[in-house]
Image 1 (spheres, rainbow, N blue to C red):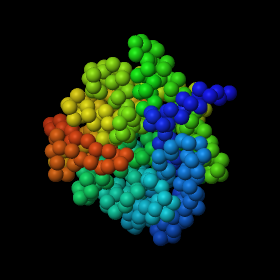
Image 2: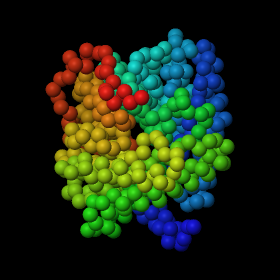
Image 3: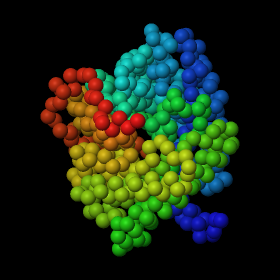
Image 4: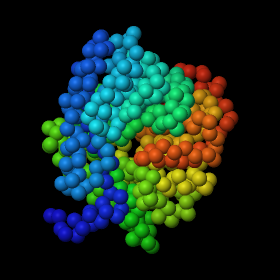
Length: 452
């Protein structure tokens, strides 16, 4: 039974603590759109996306208005396009990207994800061409997001793909240098990518998913921080319990929105992603939660322990609130999208090395980090390999979304605006990993892979 206190508490969370549903994402399978004629395939893709998602934005706005819950983004994820492109290997896959962009504009969504390839154990037909086309595809489109899975705990790490992705990330930044290198901000390299992730830029509709599904990503770093601010003097166990209770309330709201969107759109409900997704807005920061626990600045010694507590408590609270938790579910630490992370990076408290350590205990990985524009492709590949190794060995999702700021050096700033935010260019270790990266091959799967 919901009482008046619960209602007033939720209203306060929305009005004063940045509580929102970060995204309603409709996943759409394009497997039935495959055709050896690329023009016919693109026509089928456009028609199917518009047919399924034509009312997505309107429905999200109606739910937001009726329930008073801010729903920030409405998005679409589709089957990895490399799989669709395999049917027409002699054609330019950028045509698919242009079709996705056109469909995104027609439906009014914020982003469309799935210009993707799954190459963790090798390259299938369509994969090579799609990877090489990513810089052009992201430079010629506005709403398309791209992701590539280069490793899993079961398969190991495809180092040939890692080597390629270092070059592709750098070229994507160069192709969009006149727009603050925005292309690289829409490109994610994964290890253990989930098939039901509602968040961009890494969302794609996995081949094991149904024909169409609704996935919802909730958020609420400000709510968690506000709760901790009222709990001065609590010990660590009490802090963890408080975060669990708060995550429960946030997730229940997300579950309500997901089920309502599912009912109105006549599409199955998939998952609620529990991830605490920050924004550049003041009061909506994961870093500030860690500082509320007692750290002078995010990045100080103790940050990794505090983040581990936060991530675990969020998951425990969330799974009590919903039987269908999925996606990434935890705490995001994107630098340019988090006001506290931006401040910590600017003052030198937070380095890429410390961020890498933090990714061992939280969701995703090195996210929205701006690096010098003269960083070599091999160094970018090595950053990807390091992060993938953390994910592979720990049986968790990790990812890299770094933005080489073309023409800028460490200490300068890059500004994307909106949810993508802004941030300082962070220095990287300049010692060369080139010989290691150019060896190629595959890092074998760890012992954890033999769990069957």
